[in-house]
Amino acid sequence: MKQISQGLMCKSLLTFLMIAFFQTILWAQDGASESASGSSTTTKSVTSTSQSSDWYTSPIVWVVAAAVFILLLVALMRGRGDSGTTASRTDRVTVTKTTSDDIV
Picture 1 (cartoon, rainbow, N blue to C red):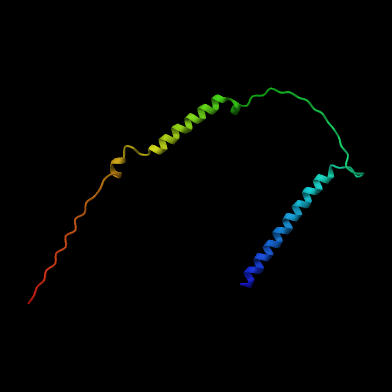
Picture 2: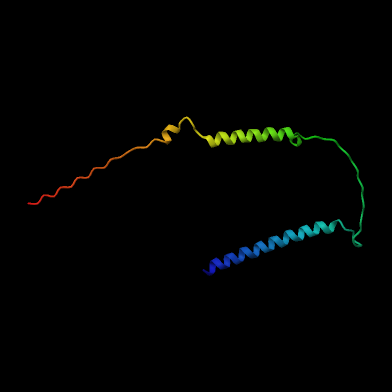
């Protein structure tokens, strides 16, 4: 039982160290953008306009996709309608037990 708890403790410690290591790396990247004399602010203003139309932003694409999805869903929910006769078939089993009392 102690080996299990020691193994769990070791895994927890290694996980904590990995998270701390990645956290330090992320803070270092954030600190690299600042200058050595302190934090400086730089303002950059960029204005650009572009007119691009992607195929998935068109409403007709969403309507067609929804229609195909609904048709596929109906087809899957319907299942095998032609072979449904075998699924509704029931078999009857009759069991007959006979007992005899032979009193001698």
